[in-house]
Length: 203
Length: 203
DNA sequence: TGGAGATTTGACCAAACGGTCAAGGCCGGA
DNA sequence: TCCGGCCTTGACCGTTTGGTCAAATCTCCA
Image 1 (cartoon, each protein chain N blue to C red):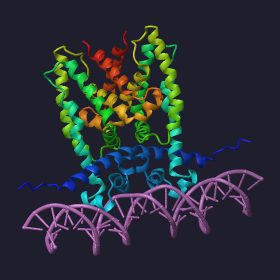
Image 2: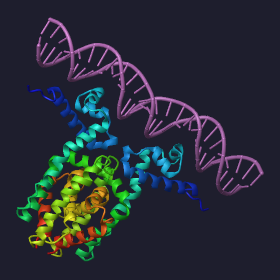
Image 3: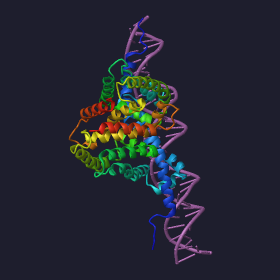
Image 4: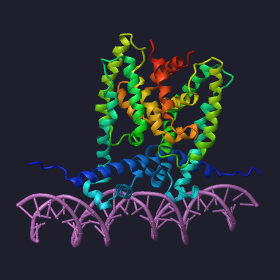
């Protein structure tokens, strides 16, 4: 009865491939990554990789779509019925935690967008655009109600993306500039961003 | 007497190579760019390319170091003797203009940092770190004098970099999310960022 | 335990890549 | 106009890369 669509081995190897592909693609970009690198990181032979995925491109696409939900969740979780400032600060905090805990995922998306989003353009122009429009409407309502300062809602979202993802995407620069003394920039970054957005949003 | 170190032809071709390399490297990253692409964009044959530069890597390094000064100039130009808010807003404005007028240069550096700065680590850890330390000291003095709000000066600089470069590095995402209606996001971005930093810095 | 199907791999291929080289063309000064 | 040196290139090379294939091995259950 219980016919698993995936065997145990399939699940294990697919998982190993995703993990390896994330490691390699995020570090070198699509073109810079090689199947041999991914295969070695996954502990498989190259032909075995291609037994599970038809091509390098297919691995990349599968990886991106697999991570997309995780990536959009923090914005989705911004609650229209909650307290405006708390909701926005919560979004900033969750997004910064994502940069701290999943920097490879952040760099994977950054690479893709930097190259002109050749494999994500459709998703960006539909799903992401709709999600942002939806949340921008919520922000605008909060502004209309006088509960936060009036700002361009989409650029407000852009600035949250930019500042939080900066700590993952440009991590080597951040660490180099801060120096070796402070090994973890995230606590300070969290305090800074909370201050910034509190002042920005105050009516 | 006037023995030009470079002949006319050398100057013309070097210039064409830099322009072509900027176009190709910024669009595809170092590994994603090919010598054939650069040669074609420069209107030269591949062996001719390698007559002017010894290797692909040499082109990339020369391009980065050639653009580095331009890239650091806006921060250098922040005047310790000027009005604090005006100086910081001026820096933000110049940095945003750089993203608008030289997006390829921004993406070139973004690519380099994303990949872990394999060819710029030394510069980042010395020149950039010193420059930031210098300007952070200026910001701290302004805070001590009560002329701007007290904030972590380095994270303040990070947030300026992040928000202004976002419009160049993630341009396709910005344009896709804003939609086709508004072709040029920069005027709005400029207004948004001016508002943001005015509120953030107000004592 | 036998066998059907799932999994794995060594050997291989064609294309793309960075780079070389010898030879030919071109230019500017004497 | 002639010549030395600057400039240009077609042909080529070894390596890397994404991908294929037939054969071998393993897994699981009837």
